Amino acid sequence: MPQTPATATPDAWTTFLDWLSSLLIPDWNGLIHILPVLVIIGLTGPILSLLLFYWLYHAFIDRGGRVQIGELEPIAAAHRPDGTPIFPVNTPYCVEHELIYPAKARTCDVDGAELIVRCPVDDNARVAGEQLCRVCGTRYQLGASLAPVVVKRRRNPPEGGAAIA
Image (cartoon, rainbow, N blue to C red):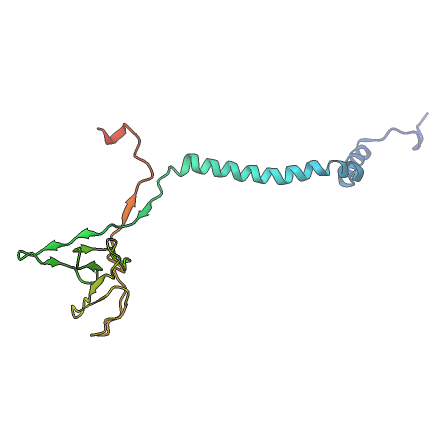
């Protein structure tokens, strides 16, 4: 005897549609119950990923090779045969202590006196804090491109290797 549609077993297509509807139309009550877990995963997952990338970067890519710029120290001025000091132009210096300072210095480290600078155009002396020569009118910035750089090392090179060979 043939089966009637009311008592027929569901075919494969009906089974697939029932399964698909359970995915597309979720059980909202069940999702509300697992919402705190989803929020924790949604917050901690990106934070843990960022921490992992930060650790990987510092462990394998950044080997501590950052350069730190140090402060230049004043140096003693060279002397002519007659004993007078030689001070370069456009560089701050202290006449009393015969020290040549880096370009950004404005006062002597020994006694706090104002430093002097010779104008590169007319060789007149002026105070290092002024950016304008009062005689020739030249405006300039001390050591704008010729200032040396002091590099500090954060750590020494690894022992062994090609440096010893």
